[in-house]
Image (cartoon, rainbow, N blue to C red; front, side, top):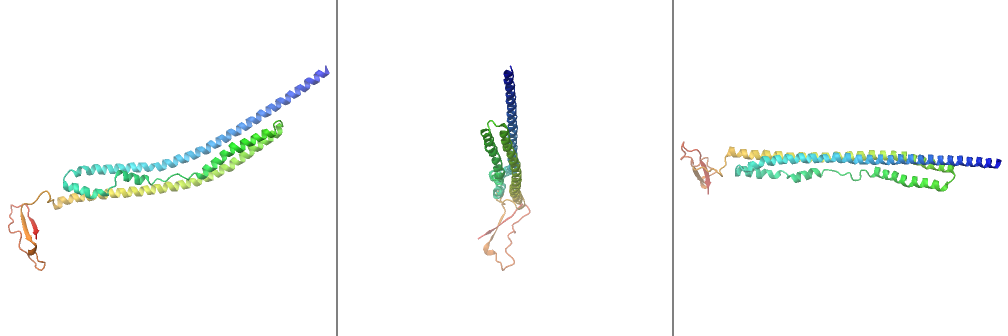
Length: 278
């Protein structure tokens, strides 16, 4: 009877020890899982920061497309203004042809603005490298370290626990250091991006000013050219029937006078055209 009781006690103790070991093992599994989730969240956080950086940069650069659209509209308006003028008469057509050549085409104007865009290429090299380093550390160092703990201490629960907590502790310290490095690199990238965005906008403003000036000057010159027809008259289309001829031989720079070419003029005449003949 005493022997049976002793065996029962031993079995109970073994069961208790086994239960405690199982509970300890489960606790370590949860501890590892919790930290792995934190590592996954950290990687996602850094990836999101990089993605947001790229998106913001591209959004600011793509704003130049709006300027290109605005300039295209201005050129289309100028073309819509000039197209009917060409149909008025040959004088007006010639005025438009003479000065509209300085107005850039829509394709040339858009390209000159779009070419001002600077690329994001190379800006994120440092923070992306830091991100990849941390990601690889989690995938390799932490994973291999935990596997080594299990390999070295398959039954010694205390030693296994100490080994695991050291691997996790080292990983947490490495995470903090790498996070600080990532923040520093990302801040530097922001400065570089700001400079590229500023350069892109300055280039774009210069192109817009240049094109706008060419359009406005061309329109002014065309208007002046057409106005000169009204002032000077156009003899290409309306010739005066009353003509007076003066020969070159009659014109002597040493003499103050020449033969009066207007003796035949009467009040009924609306115009007189003086022609110099050889």
